[in-house]
Amino acid sequence: MNSLPTEVTVLALAGLLQVAQITLMSVTANLELDGGKTLGPRDPQRLGKPLMEQVSPRTGRIFRAMNNHFEALILFTIAVAVVTLGQAASPLTATCAWTYLGARILYIPAYAFGWVPWRSLLWLTGLIATTLMILSALF
Image: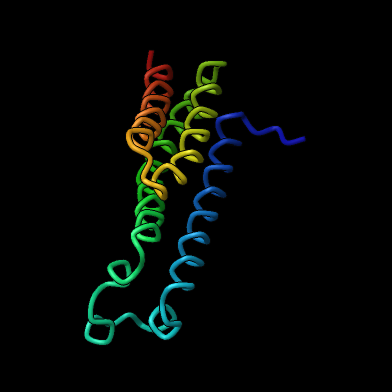
């Protein structure tokens, strides 16, 4: 059994989720595009237009969901660092960390399949959970 704080464990799992999203995006894009495009240097004059403009709408959404998680992961990492370094871990911060991860997992199909308004609500859930972690460490 690991001895990492819950928040750090969830951060590691969020990192693995990002790897899974990169893989999902790569596989779906490579199934749709010529291998020469995805394996090459991606020079604009050779491609004509950006690769993500050449894929299906769903693959484009998978790509945007992956990029969105990169952005969310930055703030979540700050929250975990503040909680951990500030020795402010609590049942609230652990619950918020798991809530963030759950929201981010559900965000992928919500974005890929265009679930309105669920995609936005899941994004907001992750943001609120992350914000509460930071606030709880400060106060």
